[in-house]
Length: 243
Image (cartoon, rainbow, N blue to C red; front, side):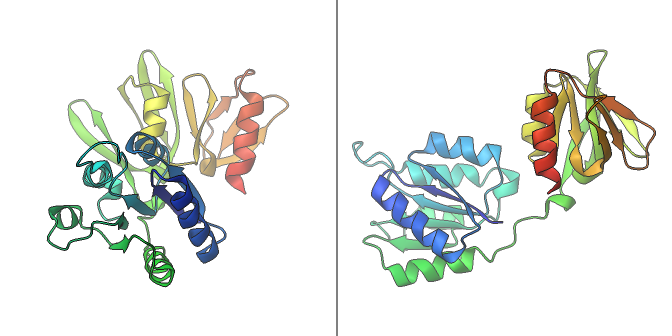
């Protein structure tokens, strides 16, 4: 399933672009943002496969290029170094520095040429985003950098003011960080909270005893208890995650 973020201040044009993306791929998950702040929040919470970015997001401000600045900044985020960015503009000029600085995929001129839009977006959506299974998470352990494949992490729990990172054949402690921060950095729907201070990888779970509130992991003797307050939310997310 492709995830597309449309950043456009005009609602009519946002809806037009959303309709076109839906016609190209009815399964695509489409996000809308009217300005750069909304766009940043969405891009950090999920992994976007294609950006459609209007250069001018605040037309009331003379010389505004907030969309262009967003595109430049998003390129500094590791996971978005090569993600297709399609520039939407009525000001296209190949000599504009923004186009080379951003390494844009293509551009869409206003007023819209619908045939060209469909072709451009269709091509960009064929781009394969980095496989989540191959991504690594880098920890600082005793002053050294330690990286593990995200898919290999079974769970992470808070213990004695540190975070205990557990894999099948390895475990180590890292300085305490909030679960919210770690979940954002993992950037994977496979990781969910099962109780306060404990994150589990649903892909590593072999069985859940919902009556007694226990979680069991593949190839491990470890088990965790689901917090009573979080049981309902955990079970909903767990069922959704294994579908």
